[in-house]
Image (cartoon, rainbow, N blue to C red; front, side):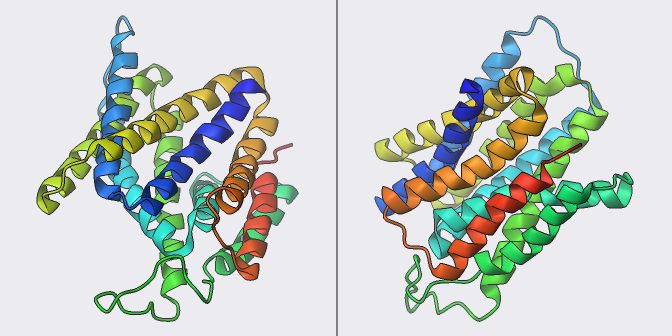
Amino acid sequence: MLFLALNIVLLSGFGLFLKHAKDNQQRLNPIGFVNYLVAFFISIWVLSQEQDYEFSKLTFVLGVSNGVTYAAGFELFTLGIRLSGIVVTAALVRLSIIVPIVVSMLFWKEIPNLWQTIGLLLTFVAIPLLSQREKEPTYRFTPDSPEMPQGLGFAIAMTILGITGISRLTMKAFNEMCPIDEKSLYMSLLFGVATIIYLAICLYQKTWPNWWEVFYGTLIGICNVAGSWALLIALDKVSALIAFPMSSSGGVLFTMFVGMVFLRERLGRIPLIGALLAIVALIFVNLKP
């Protein structure tokens, strides 16, 4: 249970540190670059500890593809924090688990059980609620950035859900079709591609991380990698039936608590109901007989 708790705290810390950095007027793109660079170095170090490893074309393709979706997902995550806050964005990211579930139903003929079906239905109820914005939004629009048209919030929510879901689907494809001993290589490719993309963004914008952004990026990068490994270790000690529901719902609950109590994030009544529904939905979609 210790590693499961670490997974919840570390992966929640990814978004919470990002939110704290934004509140302290730090630039998020340089932080994203440092985050992925740190994660890449850690993955390369883990890979170097393996005595011999194999390389397959499919692992290369999936690793590169997932690196692109990770970079796009980070950009959407920061947009979500600006528009809706960390609690709503974290809930949407966790709900993206429904994408590989739905694809598995359509292409791999996997039939969800009763609990998973209830969870999927609750997800479709929670998403519109989470996309509702407060009267005084977290992100204040300027004359150069006009007020968000009606319906754009829902479109952004669906895009976050879709891109993050594709990222999860790519990981599922790797686990299903690639040798498990290529996981370190896969993670190195993933974070390496994401690092290159964010390096290009920083060079294009002519921005370079300051010391505070290096600090935040390092913390987020460590949370990124350590949280994923903590879940893998937890799965060796705890049943997946317990691990996945606790990781998903616990992450949203922990983020909600820290975001509202310590980061003083205000959450409207409708998005709050959506976040609570998301927690219940995440428990149900992870339940297996």
